[in-house]
Length: 123
Image (cartoon, rainbow, N blue to C red; front, top):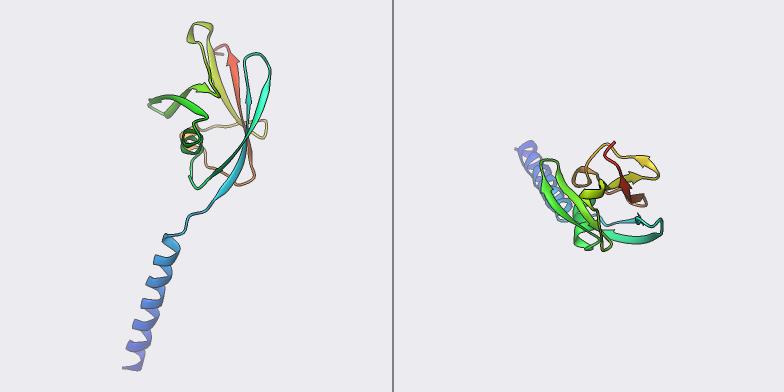
C-alpha cells in the first residue's frame, strides 16, 4: 500500500513539473546584419521567444515575402525589395557562413549573428 501511495505521489510530482516547464518560454537575443544593394549595412537587435528565425524576423517587421514550398521566401528586408528582373535575392548566412536551411527552418540561437545580404545572380 505504501509503495502505491509513494508511486502515485511521485507520478503527480512529475506531472506538475512537466506542466510547469511547458508554460515557460525561452527568450533569445540575436543580431541581424542587413547588407543592402548599395553595400551599406545596418545591424538590428532582435529579442524573441520564437523558435525559428523566420517568425522572429516577421514579428519584428524586418522582412516580408511570400510563402513557398520551403517556407517564407524573403522578398523585402529593411524596406529594400529584391528585383527578380535583376536576379536579386536575399542570402541568409550565420556568422558569415552559409546556412543550409530556409529562414523558417533556421533555429534562433541566443547570441548568434545572422546576415541578410542582397545578392545578384541565380548561380
